[in-house]
Image (cartoon, rainbow, N blue to C red):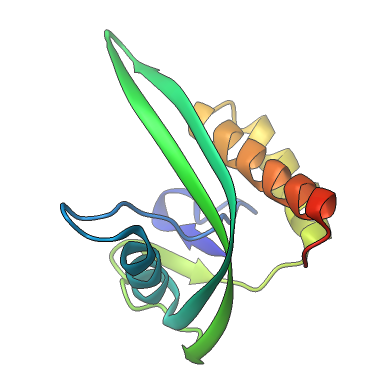
Length: 133
């Protein structure tokens, strides 16, 4: 899990994420983002969630889509590559993520953290549903 500088003084960590560059295949983008944010090389094991919503920021509505994957680390080492973006890395249990981290995200009052908490819970709910972990 990653922690960004903006919330380094909180117990909040979240899954690595990012966007695909123009013309970049999603699998390549997911692997690149994971490498940039954690130092790990991954193989995507399973597509888990496809969530769409509209994000409202002042007078603008932005269509948003989150694709969530389950992956295995296959190389590299847990190390911050992008130190400008990432403050800390930590391996966390499901119980930590759905406990202290989720509570801190929901208490933050920030919609982005509430969405991240939702994605995390939906990810584990889906894995429980399909029996994959």
